[in-house]
Image (cartoon, rainbow, N blue to C red; front, top):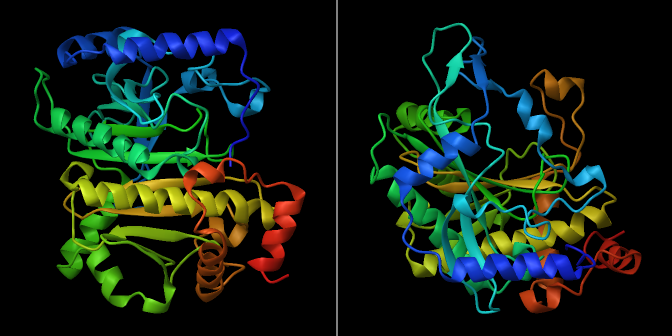
Length: 382
């Protein structure tokens, strides 16, 4: 899990100042928010579409993204600790049981613009979007170290953003078709910020959402309904009241998994309180597992949670960087170094051995050499 950094007096002061501001945050004015985003977050961008793919993956060209802070620059890139959170871009907040806050803000390093992202070839129209960050906590804790009930408030924030953006409670000359949510952990996946959910609303469907639509149109069945019916039950590794976690029988990399609701849902805002709590449990537990399993396998801790939402129905892909891509993978032929049965066994053994740890105790279980050796013996069977 995350190793608590040395926190200076100034960092404590910045965080306390932010929390005081969040405690008095009023009703957001989205018209004013869009004005500020245009003023402060605009990044000149263009995009192109690779014509070889039927579902048209978009490549956005945004050179200014190089200026965003990154983990590997040798400094703590946390905007909370560094006092870099722009209070004019704050949207909404929830108070946690610890006294800290979960909050959402417009992303000042967004690659999306409400107005100007144009197709270089002029063939596909302009591509518009806005990008928010939903922070699970103002503290230096990952979601696997937070009480489930506190982490569930992150999905309240995202659901509130969905409702406000999709209901159009502001005057904008365009609409948004989809909400894309991603949470990165580690450095390889581009995690330039500690802990936030990246929430993007876009005017055109991203490739993974279009694939879900294509599957639905071709089979007349949502992918996750098909997955629940066809994926071997022996690959289910964690079961909650309203959600399940399973290793897909077509996984491309070791320890890939899919988190999905037992009843079909489209948007995060459609989830009831129990479902949000179980989604919190599932994402927290899997994040905790990977935070110890990957170092034990001598892999850099690095993974993404990719949320699929919309009419194609909700599910979350767990995508660890657990095997480097080779030439065949780049050509479209995946060679996986572990079988789905092996990955499922590892997950189940981990949850049997360590899954009873409460989030409050997880903070103290760092992937030290002793812990890595313990997991290699108890879970990996080495």
